Length: 277
Image 1: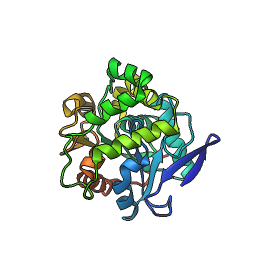
Image 2 (image 1 turned 180 degrees about the vertical axis):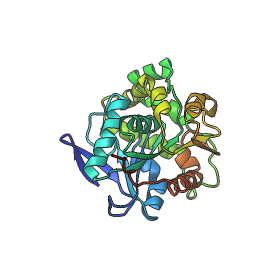
Image 3 (image 1 turned 180 degrees about the horizontal axis):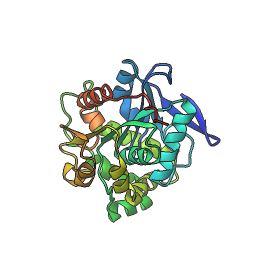
Image 4 (image 1 turned 90 degrees about the vertical axis):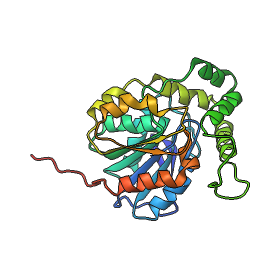
């Protein structure tokens, strides 16, 4: 699905179904140096089971025009603009890693629009090591290799991979390299710097009232579960699901992530609540 946001082309994958804004809507927001394809299994299943799906490519990523946005706040505004352009009044926002901060900030800016929030591989503050930021600025290829290794639970892949010879780690690495080739303007550095500088997470968490799901990877070393106590403590009503995966949980534990998202979506009241005059 192609849209136009402030004169620039924007793309959202709809899971192989024609988008219908009258259906309950789920927005899937990818992380740094990624695109909509990281949600391949989840987006198709949800779209074929009663939901309108928008698996977006953030500006400068995948099929959406650049440049990449340099702050989480700007990305949150862009997500809200996507919803308006698609004719969606209320949606469940699901974000992974950087995308989780974008979803959280969007809920702070437009609480009436966000029916529910699913935060995958999240933490706050989402600080990035100075050494990684510097490597991203000077040698993006090496930074991609570093993060790709850290984002997976093991180098040896598991029997649950989709087919013989399929490499979860290799696929993730090639996706990040493809993002660099399509947008050579230091995309990796821009994304990770945005995560590092985001400062509204605690205020957004304190204000959050909608149903919330946390999905954590038990073996995640990028955003380890022990680092999430500020968010989970501030959002005490949030449900926590732990999956047997590293940071790239949608690829390493796709069925477990899908089960968590589908179960959560089924519990969400998507209708806008009428305020009493």
